[in-house]
Length: 459
Picture: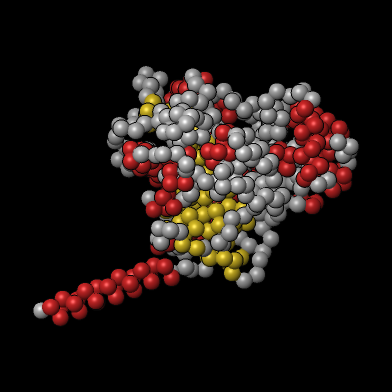
């Protein structure tokens, strides 16, 4: 009897070992735009991550300040085990709040060659084009001047474990992404310039729509979401005719609703800013502009800002009449944004009550236009440690359940809150409702007669 038990345990152990070996060794070669790729297993062992997949050609040389071009094909199988370059941006300075909060591990490798994305997918659906898993595309924030798609708060392991394929993207920032100039407009087929970073986001969304079935994703079920300038980017993507038809749901975090927290200037204003910036630096021809080093361009931007002529952010998406014909507020008001479910919210200590008022106004407008609901939230958890605030971006640890990466003394209650928020966000990606498939739960739609804001805090 004892021998049989031992044999039984041995057989069971062998079966478990074989199952584990099968899981970890199943790494199919996928074919996407540009060539073949393989991913690497994450720590959870049932999720594959593909780091640094190029979704467009490197925007360098003659392609600087041009719309993203087709991916340059590669030979052989590209093993996607290394993050792609972040867009050119400044160093984070020790002692600054956000450096100590998010960037204490150092800055990433940065380059003009930055058009890469990352995919996290359940290992068992790879190569199964009929799996039809929901997909979410995350657009990072950073005032259109900084950030990247593999920041310490951003990881897709938990999302993929919840049955949602997560894609994070890099896009051009600052002078490289949003410089507008009359000479650039003159060479453009539509006579416009700038918005290159937004064109990058559109290109990434189109790449996902075309290629995500290879990972088991549903190209017709893509949710887009972002925070801060990333959320402003989501507003642009649901507004633009180039992208809004590819969107099935949208989450807008910490940029309000109606009303532009980051205003979009007109084309002539944007071009005048760019021309003055380049003229002051002695860069008066396209040849000189494209030959200038990133260091020269950064110095030109710094010198222009030192003049103090522009309040706020001078290098942002603007209304060019081509990619962006109207603001989000105008498009929402005239009912020309993507007709999909929306979730909007902010943090407790983040530009309130302005953001809350704009969210309620958006919900009221949508109620009269669409059958799709609007869900509102406020992240109320003041993080443990110092400073004890629900600061701008503080919810990101919870949205991606990456609390283990933080220096904060998070409690078991914080992990419970992260679990709840992850359920809400992934449910929204799956069903357009944070409560889940049947739509029944404590989170009610925000309507004019019955305003409702879900307050997210530890219990």
